[in-house]
Length: 559
Image (cartoon, rainbow, N blue to C red; front, top):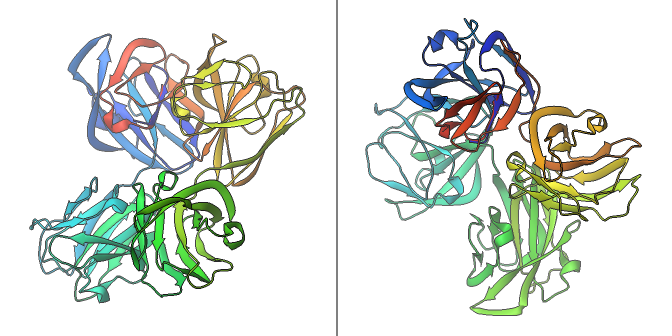
């Protein structure tokens, strides 16, 4: 699901299959199982052990399974050839998906035991700690989606190694009795988890690693911990939270509507946290000081401070933080009052050290909350020039299959499944801007949907993705064109004739371009994102279908 399917000729040839991608990808080929698929799969592709179904003119047979083979490609040109394909016997499907975390060659040395290692994805709040015990690690909400490496309870490896195919953050949960065994280079995150055999909680330590070999050294005494591996994600370390009472500091991930406010005030609660879900809350002193608030982050972040609304919060917010227009609630010993709203102020920080100070904080009047979240796409200063109209521009997030095309018409753009989560820039129907500009705070992919009548107006540098969307006023579909931009100013030049299109902006995501799909019939090539259980197999065979696609969700199929 979510892959891109490249739909082309029913019978592939031994010629090039090629396309460019803007992010690292895994290419999965589905090979006709009636032949020697291992010998015919492209060079370097490895069998995954999975297969999908093939429905041939409505006749489904166990013979018609298509085993899957996969290979990773970096951003840039992906090119391969099927082997031993002759005319009329070369059926294969091509799916492309953004690369996701895979662990391999997991092994340890210097152990006192001989239990086999296991890898399990964390999908809930608890996980079995050891392969030969029923002990559990619990309170794992911040580690969901990670891969947990499990060994025997009595294993004491001096070294643990494994390979990863993407950059990762490795998190170790240390027994409070063995903190001297934290591996070199790991830093405390401020978060903890629990376990079923110790009263004390287990502090978390983290370190980033590039794709390739990860080698963890624990020393001759071995190691008692939980080891979690996740695609690189937000980790806080070296946290300083200046306060008047020097209260201890904790970090908690927000996944509900309320959070305890301070480590030295059990009854104080911040609530109405819908807009802060997924952020990390730094809990410390009830009364912050004007000293440093500081921490290191491994990814770009937005820091949000919640300021006590009973005071001049604009004057007291840290320098450079801007009001968001939102506020959250504060429940003071069970007494909730409209006075106790905490307006929010925000500022972006790059990976590295984030440091700021509250202003004009005196003892006993400096209440503020600090939230940290991975930076997400925000558009600002959206404007155009050279237009023949004067309609205001609007920005709307794409959350479904359709969106209103123009601010002064009811026309719709439809079939937007591959664009969900993007920001759509809407103007008036009769606007013809020569130039459109806006600022973005993260690297983005800009996608323009062109009317088939105005393909000569595709902006410079944009390339066809092979995908199309529909609209409610034209019979022909609208092809998509895409271009990557770094964070900062995006300037789109459409020329003096103006432009009729839909403009979508998304955090940088997988885009295919310059697609070559060699086939014996030179059938047209299409790209479709996989979000269901079946996909049309070939552009020159309407009745042929690939199905049972659960493991390919999110990939792009080249038809």
